[in-house]
Length: 408
Image 1 (tube, rainbow, N blue to C red):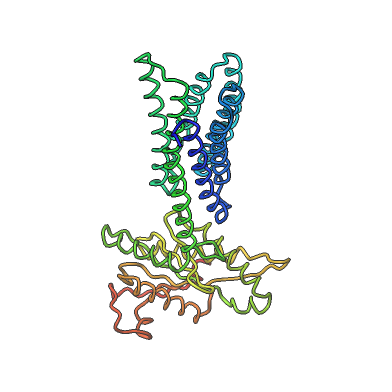
Image 2: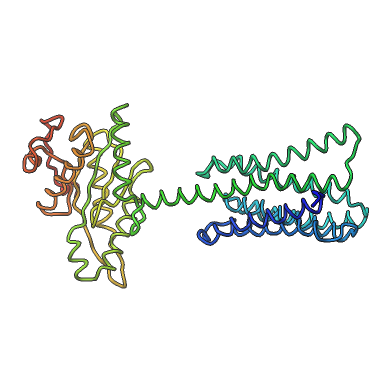
């Protein structure tokens, strides 16, 4: 079988439909991502356009015009899908209006001038303009977390633009215009080669986004939406490393909801879950942007906050205690009052590593629970002796046992 233009167009069309199967498989598993469906429809449209070029009689101006309008529509679908996927939804809507105008202009030019070569040149230029806009959007979208894949996609789109404009510049300079068959053959081969790049780039973008989402889910407590224990440990390691480099102080604040079992027994576990979510929200409203709040386990929360002195840490703890006491949980027409007990440990004063700081904060929290609840206590050395005398701490002479009632 001779490798003529209809044969190449048929191969391109089948290849694009096979690529559509790959994107369709992603759509089955990740329907929540915007843009995949649009990219899939665009790939199918592009493939059908090339099948039309291969199967419809190319002596008919209507067949040629219809084929290239279908190809342009497919390119629009691809570009619009990419824009939606990276979050540029407003650009995609404007883009849709522009492409409707473009399709109308292409049809008008085709019937007015009745020149198949003009149709193909217009399709190449307009398709390249659309891809150029999409490539620029992808290149300058700095907020997406999958930059490497987006660069691959943008590279494929840019190559298409560059090859077409270089070809047109050569034809203009040499004044040797290719035949209609050569134009269609070259455009078909170009689309086949570059479609492998942009479909591959889009597939990698989807995969990397899935990995980012899974990584985020692994660091978030499902019930409260704040950091989980794993994320807290990772953040604490980073905070200690930063403290060792530049002595940037921080405090570990551990909170426990007072009488949480009684809340569950009286109102039910759904009410208890609502209390946990509400307190997580209250804490999130009180902390600063550089602070971390997470659920340590059960009814315990842990915060890592910037604090150079014990006074700064205690002021933060008192603010948290008051906010939780003054903002009860409203659940199913019930107003559930709650308080928290808080333990405080300062890095460099009460510990130098994760184990020391967490143990110190936990011991201070236990003392706050035992001495009346609804208060905060800063770690002191005598609490350590009750558990593990071998643990080494700095500043042995600093002993604090402060009741939050002094702020009342």
